[in-house]
Image (cartoon, rainbow, N blue to C red; front, side, top):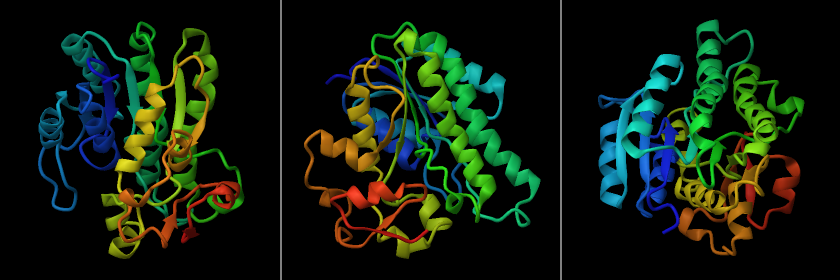
Length: 288
């Protein structure tokens, strides 16, 4: 169990992909800090930092739930300090927290614009910056941003330029920090799904039950993240990984477990470059 005793700091990990990554690491006996805002049950969103911690413990890991607004520098510093105090260091930083609103320029109010940029771009920069001094002491340190490839085509901007800018800001953190901290042996990579993932965002904002039925489970992203964490940090950095490609490189050929009944009608996610779809062995249909 390679992640046994390793410590992960995960932003926004109370549900969805972040929680799936936490649970995959927990099965190895990892320590996981869940740094997120949800302390009380939400009427439309499953899970809290405390239910996530309970699931992590049940899976075999050790959990530290920390109420943390990723936009607040003091709260992030406190969450990281509590992680180091509890577990003795940090081996992996997962920047999962994200905000989305798919509106055009005239329909996007500046409060929502600021929210997306503060959580996505600034939050990723801040969490990474705060974890890096501790990652420098780790044996195989990784930063993983749940962010897309930098496919700079107008089609990704024209309908929701504010969101794309905020999301690509996370990707630019990958591009810049991977080069900046290569000398320290810290891997900085992005991971993005080729298909939509059945999360609260899909069910509430991106097509509802119809698109959810055409989506894979968060487990595919978690398994791909785990595979990335296994790679030597000095040799695997600066990559914009696609979940399916990562797992095929690991020898996985049967992906039906991630999408029972939907294998022939998967919906393609935002920001996936055309060449990735063209080279995929899986049938994926663009819906965005």
